[in-house]
Image (cartoon, rainbow, N blue to C red; front, side):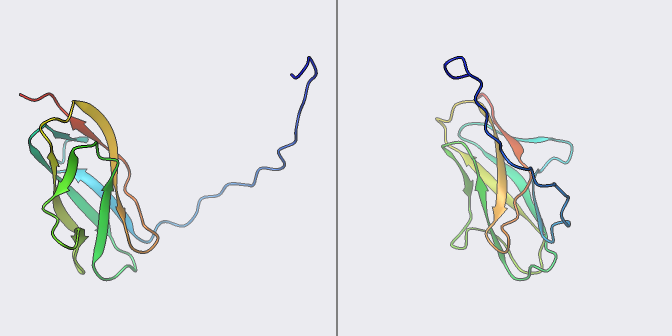
Length: 132
């Protein structure tokens, strides 16, 4: 309502949605503990996770970024090539390092490949717990 008058505007037609083909390459970021549903880390400590890829037609080494980590949490021990899964391998254990000053929080994070169509993992919860 503008000046007590009904004002409308047509948005046009909404395109029909459909399900596309299954992704050729998929990425997952998983806790080390197969029964866990999140990754937990304490300030000043390290935590491990599995980075996995189902390659499909993607060949060669694949590099990744772990995104949306809290300020003060990094992927540690990555070397000059960054977070990488070499050719003919499908998984790698990664290590997250949390600075001692990071406050407790819960944050969804994900891994994204830097090759191909940049497949991205489903989000997983990263819990920065209270320091003991």
